[in-house]
Image 1 (spheres, rainbow, N blue to C red):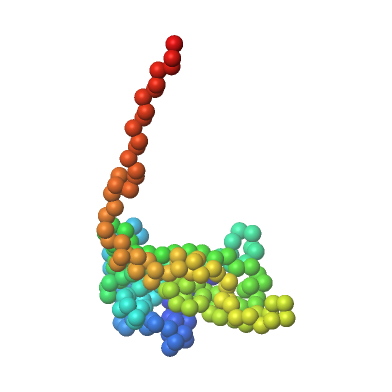
Image 2 (image 1 turned 120 degrees about the vertical axis):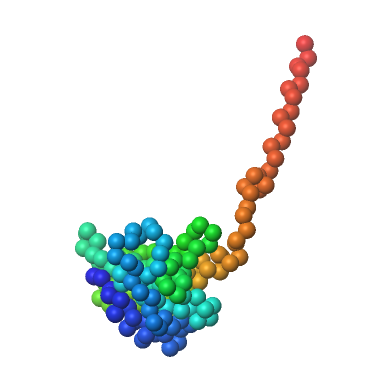
Length: 195
């Protein structure tokens, strides 16, 4: 299942009223035909959508897709987010591209319960560093609120483009590894044994 940019745009517009991002308008153009993926240049990749993180005024290209794994046990979802300039060029921190990507495998039961669209939306929200969709679940006679997909908070921080952007602005200093290592202690001379 491929999520088209129109479907992704629709999902984004349905949630952006309570989120801290907006659709970019106009959208950056598509990447030039024949431009290798490894080449940094202007434009959105197929099925990417440009959004602006309004709280930090940063443009981001977001992508969500899914496929059926070989064992046909459910769907594997993929999400990526990359910091971009207004023309869609990936931004760099030194020589490192500011990109985050991750995947999540959903069982057939999870897909039957929530649907592929809402799971894809959770993937997108996690990549953007937004709160993921909350659901009510029954556990031991109690009703609990949890993320639709019960991701750990540290995992959510690790896949968030906002986290990557924050780290990029605070870690622009070079570190000399040699200064971090302790100096070796001098090797003691062997003491002569009494004869």
